[in-house]
Length: 268
Image (cartoon, one colour):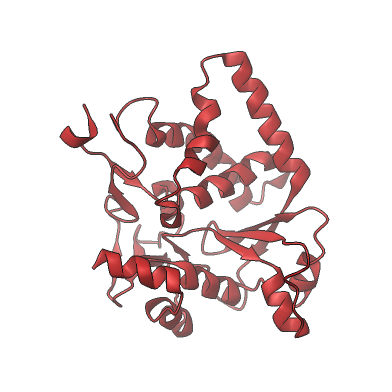
C-alpha cells in the first residue's frame, strides 16, 4: 500500500516514553503552545503525525516506524531498570542509544530524517553477521565516548517532557554566562538532556569533559533549569504528570527561539 493510498500515525515521541509521565489516573497533562491545557489518556494524536518517517509503504517491516518499534521494544526494559534503581543490571550502551534515537526523531529533524535512517540502517542489514558486527561497533563507540548521569527532581518539583524530548546543550554557553568570558574558541562539548519520568532525568555527556563537572557543581542541571530548557526547545506541546511551573509555561508559550517561532508560523 503506497503512501498516497494509506497512512500510518507515526509518533515523534514514543508512546511508552509519554506513558512514564502518566498520573495516578492514567492520564498525562498536555500544554499546547496556544496555552490550552488538558489531561488525556489517549496518546494516538499526541506528538504524532501521518507518515512522519516513511515513504512507500509505512506498514512495511523495513519502514523506519517498524524498525523504531523493534529497537525500542529492546531498549525500554533498560529504562525501566534505571527507573527502578536497578543499576547493576543496566546495559548502559542501550540507555545511550535510547537518548540518541529520541533526539534524532524529534520535530527539529523533520527535514533531516536521514540521520535517523542512518542510525536505523544496520537493523535492515541482510547479512546477519555484519549486523552483529555493526551493532557491536556502535555499542563500543557509545561507551567509549560518553558518560551517563542520572539526576533526580528536587524540591518537590517534577520533570516535564515535550515533543522535543531531548535537549542538546552546548555546555560552553552556560559556562560563558558563569565566567563572563567568551568560550566559542574552546572545544565544543554537547550534553544530551532527557527526562525519562517526572522524577528522573538522563544527562549524557562526553568522557573527559572539561565543562560538565563545573556546571553540575553549580546546579546548572537542576530540575528547574532542565524544565526551562525543555520548554525553550518544545514546538507544539509540553507534557507532564501534575506540576508545571508558571515561568516554564510562560517560556514555552511566549518563546523567543527563532527556529521554534518559524516552525509555529508554518503550522498555523
